[in-house]
Image (cartoon, rainbow, N blue to C red; front, side, top):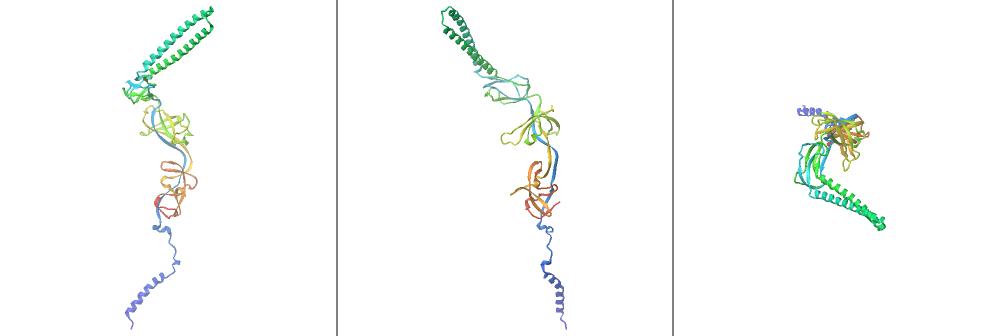
Length: 363
């Protein structure tokens, strides 16, 4: 008589036998899984393509409008400001007195120089009359020739002293005239730095004024852009606030830069009569760009070998060294041929990425 339990055991063994045989099969016969199909091993990144830069490009440089005629006015002599007739914003004429200076030495110095000149002139007149009388005595044989020569030398020295005294008088008069501060041209008073009653050192700026004529703007540009510019060349000028455009003419270009500055000055005369000093402007310069490649700045990273980017090759990221020529906005223009147009490079996810990593590109 058969045992029912044994019958159930045989059925269970028969059901598990295929699974046991499959587990005991040689593992070398199983194909290796595809690495790209394993999300846990892939670094998620976002990519873009290498772009081409070609053709002309307008670059704009910011500056502030100012009057072409500008002056910092000061006295050549020191003293106390006795009167200031000019006010901020006042329109003045050329040669108009703007301020006067009190210096107690100027007036007496001029009077003393004039008295010295008059004294020397009287002395030389007396010496010439004496020479006439001595000449008459010499003609009668009553006086030696040596005495005449001495008298003539005396007169020559006195005449030289007269010329020196005359120059000293002119200098005193000019210094006395410097006690009045005059406008060098017609314009407007821009600022007042010293008030009446304050002491002004020689050469210390008292007033600042600007002309009422043309305006200009000075901007700082890289030296390689100046090579294509010429004096008299027209350039576009854009108003920073209103985006209104006008035309300017180049009047000055810098040939050198002092100190640590890497930019050179460029001065442009403005043709728009409505522009006032202090307005924010932008001067446009045309840049003729040769064919080159560019990548986003956030795709470039610094490594032990220098600047690099990650290029996608198959399903892996490979580090490629690059060299930046120029930066325009958010794009870096490259030098060399380490990359090609259309190459796929990583711009997001760089911090988790190493050379040779498997990547999963997000849309």
